[in-house]
Length: 263
Image 1: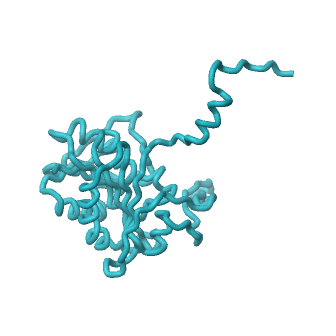
Image 2: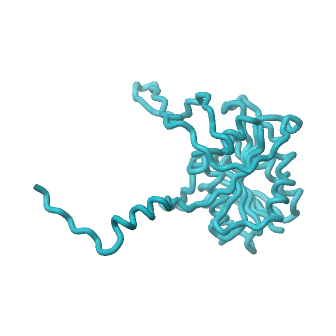
Image 3: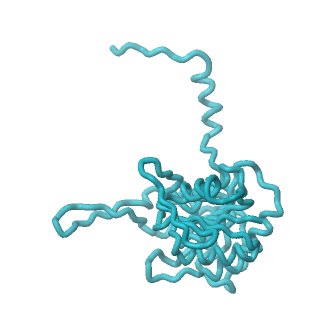
C-alpha cells in the first residue's frame, strides 16, 4: 500500500513526524509532501497568483511553498510515479472539530485526496490549551491511530467521504472509548479579532478564539473531545441543504420570474 502524507503545520512539524511513525506501521511505501511553512487555517485554498516551488529534501519527501491542497495536487499529479492508495493528513497540533472542519488545512488535505478518488483520513491531536508552551500528547494519536485506520480500511466507504479522526488531550492510558460522531457546532461568536497597536501607532488585528466553556450536544465531535474520547467523523464536501432545495423548487421552478419595475 502506497501512502501519501501531508499536513498544514509544515514539513518540520512534530505532528508530521508522528504521522510518519503511524504510517510505517501500515506500509513501507511512504511519501511525504507538505507545506514548507505552516498553513493552518488555509482551508481548501490553492495557490493561483504565484508559482509553487518544490524542494526535494529526501527520498520520497518534498516541501512545497503552498497549501495542503497544493501539496496533494502536486504529489498525485507530478511528484509520485503512481497514485497513492491512501492519503493521511496531520497529525494536526490541536483538534479539528465543529466548524474547524470548514477552514482546516488538515481536513483540506484529506478532502483533496478524496477529490482524486483516494481514501483519505485527517488526524488531529487535541491540546489542553492552544499555546506554544503546551506539549501535545502525540503518544495518544500514535498509540491508537494505526488500529483505527486499519479497521476503517477494512470497511466500505461511501463515495465522497473522508474520515476525520480527533484524539483527546489525554495520555493513552486515560483513553478508553472510540466514538463515531457527527460534526458539532460551537456558539456563534467563538472566533473574533483581537485589536493591537504596533510600534508606529497603527492598529492591527490578530484572529483568535474566545475559548469560553460551552456545553456541546451529545454525539458530536466537540462533545467527544470534552469527554476524552477518540472521535471518528465521516465528512463529505456536499454543502447543499436539501430541505431548502425542496422548498425552493415550489417557488423558483419553471420559467424564471420577471423583474418588477420600481414604484
